Length: 205
Image (cartoon, rainbow, N blue to C red; front, side, top):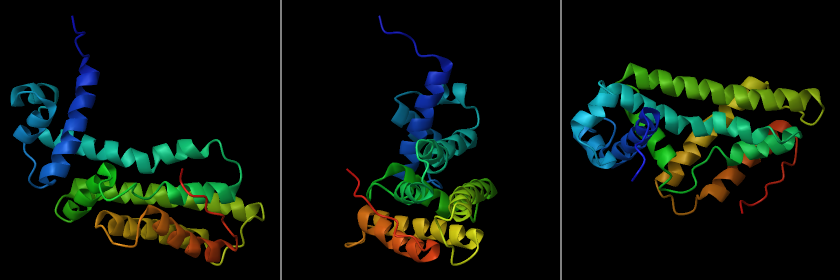
């Protein structure tokens, strides 16, 4: 006999279903029935766990955004060299390819941010946290004498996040010559100038 899922597990499943529904139908067009279809449930079953569809959609977006801040921080814990941290942060901030679901979700969120204040706040919060993540690496590297910054760390950090966003969009738009490896190298070329460091770029396995 199959074990019945807990309420928390069911909510996780619904968040994933909502993510798929957003990608398939768009953030402005997704409906309760779309989420229910993706989850293999009735609309009533979805409402039992999430009486407000907008709450579920926000949680789905937040779950996708976790990769670009919380998960990146966890990956950096094992590294001590600021240069290695910077390279790792740049590499992990890009899509894995044109169909990367987390980045497609962020693209949907960005398109709706001007019309929905909550989505705008989510994107602003993610941007600010990413900037602070880069700034911490740059400040540490500068203090240790690893980096010789060409400008203040805040300006460089903002530019790095902007480049992530710009090249990430090009990847998901299927630019013929900008893949994740090329995009990482383009961002690193700026970072090398900004930090005065060679920042070796190892190919992703």
